[in-house]
Length: 214
Image 1 (cartoon, helix red, strand yellow):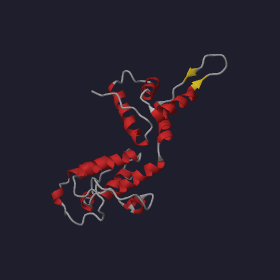
Image 2: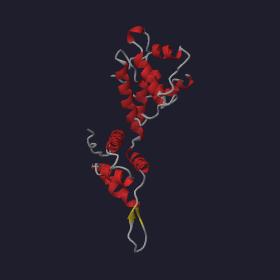
Image 3: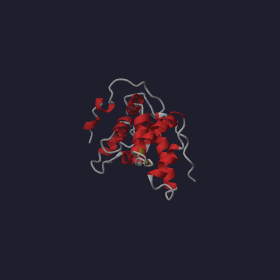
Image 4: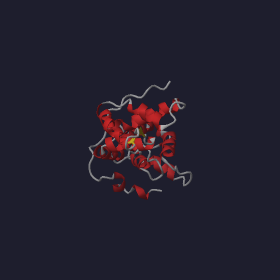
């Protein structure tokens, strides 16, 4: 059973969670959430703290009308509403730090699933979780973060090269860990449970020349 989403207080790290929970709730109760006039009041009823204060003032712009005629409240589209939430509560500096952490993350000796779980958490905090195409940041971070044995095994076949993050993830998880060397596969000590401090180039992927990969 899908439960009502938890409140949103304006925390920039909580935006993706809140939006995702709302969409899941809308899907489970699709007959009730058809129009923005159904979806937005539900979402904003879960605002608290800074988010609630922001919406009290933000919603004033949607009153339309002039003269003595009664004014009407015109809801934005759901997409416009989400864009407004993102513009208000995103923290670009914090997102940049999380993005750098994506490229510092290494698989280490733990299971591949642990690496991908933490990568996806960082990507969500960086607002990059949906950047999953072949040259997107999720693929770049994956290829940089796993031991070279994995990427060499996949690209060495010269066929059926994964075309997005989900495909890379699925292929890597299927490769048995006991089939590859345990030493010399990674040039950094940062693992999926330990991060180095962020620093250096703003785009870690560009600094590593990942764009040259097929």
